[in-house]
Structure formats: C-alpha cells, structure tokens
Image (cartoon, rainbow, N blue to C red; front, side):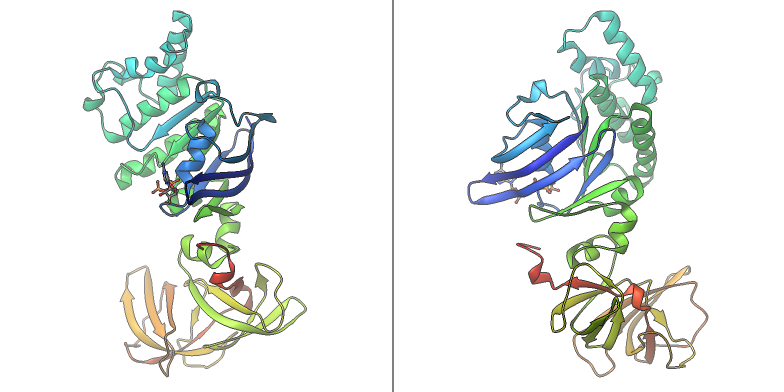
Length: 366
Ligand code: ATP
C-alpha cells in the first residue's frame, strides 16, 4: 500500500514535534526514517498508525484519506524495540493473539500462523515461552505476530536496538529477507545511520521535526543537502568560507585553509555567499613525500595520530594555530615517520569538496 503524508503537523502545546511533513512511501518499499533522538520519528510513526491524532494535514493510503480513520481500521502491524510479548503465553499463542481479535475461522488462523512461523523460522519454538528465547528470537516472535494480521503497512520502531552487535547483523538479514518474501510496505525507524545505509533503498532524514532529505543511501552520503546530514550520515569535516568566484560548474571558496575549488553544490550560491564545506575524512589525501603538490593543496600540523592497522587516523590543525581541526582517515597507510607536531601537506579533489548552506540558514533547530 502506498502511504502519503501531505502537509502534516503534530503539535503538543507549544512544541511542534513534526513540521509540514510531505513524504511518499512507495507501495512495497522498505523505507527508513532516520534521525537523532527527539527529531519526531516516533511521532510520525504513531500518526501513521492512528495512535496519535494529526494536528494539521492529511494522510493517504493508496489515495484514500485516512487522517481521521481509527487505528483498528488501518491494518497496521507494529514492532517495537521492547517486543511487547505476553510472557505467560507460548510463542504460538503470542502470534495467535492478534488474529483472535479479528474473529477469523480457526482453519485460517492456523494457516496464517504456520505461514508466519515458517517465514520467521520459529516453527521449532512454537511451544516455548518468551522467557525461554534469545533476544533475537523474541524479536522474531514480535515480527511474526505483526505479519500474521497481513498488515497494509508494517512499522518497525528501533526493532534492533536491544540486541547485541552480532544478533543485530543477523536480524538485519532476517528483516531484509522477510521484506523480500512478503513485499509489505514497511516503514523502519532508527537513529542508527549504519542500519539505514546498509538496509534501506530510500532513507528520509529528520531533524528537529523537519524532514530534510529523502534519498538512496549512496546519494545521501555523497550529496547530503545540509551540514547536519553530512555530519550525521558518516563523519565529515565542516569548514566555513565564502564564495569568491563561480563559473562553469566550479566555485572557488576562501577558507581558513586557503582557497579551495569545489564542483559539487547543494543549491544555488552566488559570489559573496557564506557557505559550509563538507570534506569526508577519507577524501583528504596526505602529501607523504613533502612534494607540496596536489589538487587543492593546503598545509596543516599533526595534532594526533591513531594507528588502527587497516587505517590510520590523523587529527590535523592549521599550522599557525586557529580553531580549525580536521580529521583524515587513511586506509592502507604507507610506513612513515611523521609524528605529532610535524607539519604535513594535504590535498583534496575539487569533486570531493561539497558546498552547503551555513548551518544557521538550514532551518529551525538544524
Ligand atoms: P527517540 O529516538 O528518542 O524516540 P523520536 O525522534 O522518536 O525520538 P519523538 O518521540 O517523535 O522523537 O518526539 C519528538 C518531539 O516531540 C520531542 O521533542 C518530544 O519531547 C516531543 N513529544 C513527543 N511526545 C510528546 C507528548 N506526548 N507530549 C509532549 N511532547 C511530546
């Protein structure tokens, strides 16, 4: 089922938890809602489910306005981080519970339970109590229970946050497989950018009640629209500056590191505009040989070195002091004799310098 949020607001007294949300979730998609704590993800999910009233705007399921439709009539399956299983009921009974409320014929109930137990690979645990299962297995029961009602939309709210790292990886694969098998339109809420990047096809990033960008994982990482997203999706170096020239798709930006050329912009800028540059730690190159050459060459001083085997992290600052610090991650670093306090040159390709609006121009709270 296709879900459309149109101009949706949610206000709690003076607080606007969700601000003018416009979002389309395609039929059959596994769509991610990503953002830091308090950005309005859960509120959005609860409005979709009908558990929270919409203050303003409209919500559509397959083109039908469901804004005022009660939760029970929306056909939503939900899975939360705390599972919410009945501890005194077996796995089978827990899955059956949601179906009983729907007054289906007994044979149909059994057929559906068998089907979802098979999909979630729980058949062998049917007679166990939740307390006799691992965290990952309990999460699968919650998923089976949500799937058994054959929901129009499946909502997953931080479903993996109570699991340890290994189980989380396993459950990521399980959720992807189950989504492929069932094709149910799914909205997955998380604050974990790695989860969203590795699993999602479309990711919507929220910040302070605003939906800022919806994009595929690669585009989100490579072309974030704002400095907030650049810093939230992976690591980045933010450097302020102003535009001194802009012609033929290339800008020159005056910064504390000198004048840098850039070829990627998040919007239209003009000469004189103040901007924020985003430069990924892995995009900055180190001048190992002291050649003093390279695209967008600039001088720095080494504040700190962290050797990690497969990579080496450099924390750098401006040679003559100043507040700017830079992080550089170098993979497969050569053996070198640089030490903390040494001067070192860096360079970065113009295509790896992304020009973004300055933070204060991004929008409220961002
Ligand atoms: P988390 O990841 O921590 O769950 P979230 O992104 O899901 O955060 P929400 O729970 O949607 O964020 O909350 C968004 C904002 O709305 C927050 O500022 C929160 O304090 C506020 N809020 C949520 N529920 C209520 C409520 N019932 N009354 C008043 N304010 C609320």
